Amino acid sequence: MIQIKNLKKEYRTNNTSNLVLDNINLEIKQGEIFGIIGHSGAGKSSLLRCLNLLEQPTDGSVFIADENITKKNSKQLREFRKKVAMIFQHFNLLSSRNVFENIALPLEIQGIPKGEIKKRVFELLDLVELPNKANAYPQELSGGQKQKVAIARALALNPLVLLSDEATSALDPTSTKQILALLKRLNKELGLTIVLITHEMDVVRKICDRVAIIDKGRIAEMGKTLDVFLNPQAPVTRSFVETSIHTKVPDFIAKKLQDNPYSYNNTYPVVQLTFYGDKGKMPIIAEISRQFNATASIIQANIETIQDQIVGIAICHITGERQDWENALRFLSNQDVNLKVLGYATADNI
Image 1 (tube, rainbow, N blue to C red):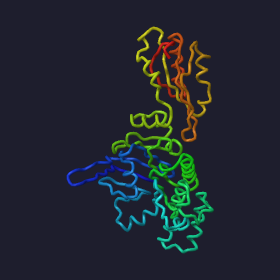
Image 2: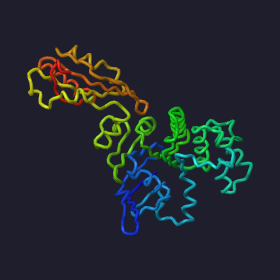
Image 3: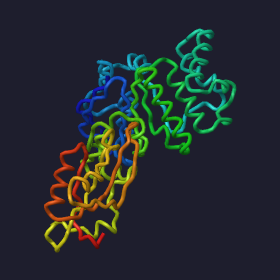
């Protein structure tokens, strides 16, 4: 659906240049929700705007539905932009127009007959669950309702792709939840490809199929959302994941850990177990005590939901004779569980 090849974006002033996108390559599949996350200034907004040429790339190509949009002239681009809609953080509704008129605007510009416009607008109002708000004005709506109107307007011309530029950043938690649920439903019902940028990993884990982490103008990491959460590779990815799920080892534990199991007598492994799906229902920790002469003491545990999957994360201290806890670690490494040995500590030091 979307292919970005060797994309660069450089802003030039009199004697200086600022490279904000550096050799970006990625492919977004038809019908998926693809997240792009990064800190402020990382280049994510510039990247999103290159997808409909609101920003003209300095170099590289953008293909959407097998068309190279970077080669289109102004007239061709205006026509093509009907296929790529966009929503924004601050809604961009016209205060002088009511809800019906705001949604109708792109249809009016295309010269659609009034009867067809009326039918389409009320279809869209039903779709975004605002059937009774046609005559309301933006100032009479909540933030979440304004964003729903903006989404309805964006869908007026039946686009193939919806670009979302921090669409939930200005919303309260309840409205954010509603907008994310709406985007997910539109993706399923309409087969709509959605590309969203955000600085919130919670948004990614709730609705994105895949995610790219952008840092200093480059793709630092990319993959399926669940994989990225369970096994983040880049430091910037790990920092984002830690803001959303509790994977960081508490400081009071970390400072007690030794790298070497032989640093002191009677030191035992402290491990982090991450499991999901059916394995999350298995008494894996209890199995350690049942099968081996070892004890797994839970130091910290929590349950998270990522892409509608239950994910369990537990930090355990496994004690017992060396052969027993080594057997327990081998058992865990052969299960469908992510095992990470964090370090070693004595039984009375944790």
